[in-house]
Amino acid sequence: MWWFVVLVLIMILVLVYGDRRGLMKYGKLSSKRHLELNGHAYYLESTRFETEEEAYYKTFKVVQDVGRWGKPLEMKYELYDCSVFVYQFENYTVGVKYKRDERAIQLLKSKAPISIADFEEDHRLTFVQ
Image (cartoon, rainbow, N blue to C red):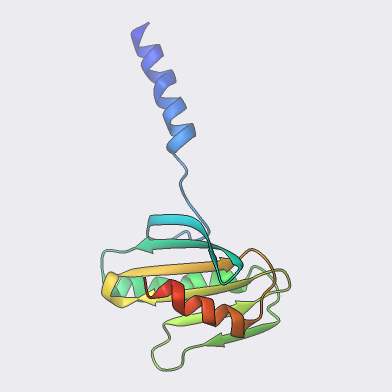
């Protein structure tokens, strides 16, 4: 009988704590939080990887996934090292940043429509942390 109680407790723990995934399905989720910058509400998510190469490669996978969320109205990216990508959709704007020194990817999603220029201003404040 005790094994049944243990099994039920394990099932409850898996249901409550099991799925901690966020918007990115790659890497180890290191943080999820909601924040406000310059009067704009955002959702920030960070994932970490074992190596810089894996993080860099998965950045492009995340960008591909974000591109499938809908038809972007506008898109902007960093040409120098392909570390920042910004998509503006009808209802929100999303930024993806590869952080080589931390072997991490950050995704910042606005909770309301916002221009890429405004997003980038807030983006700088968030991604330097």
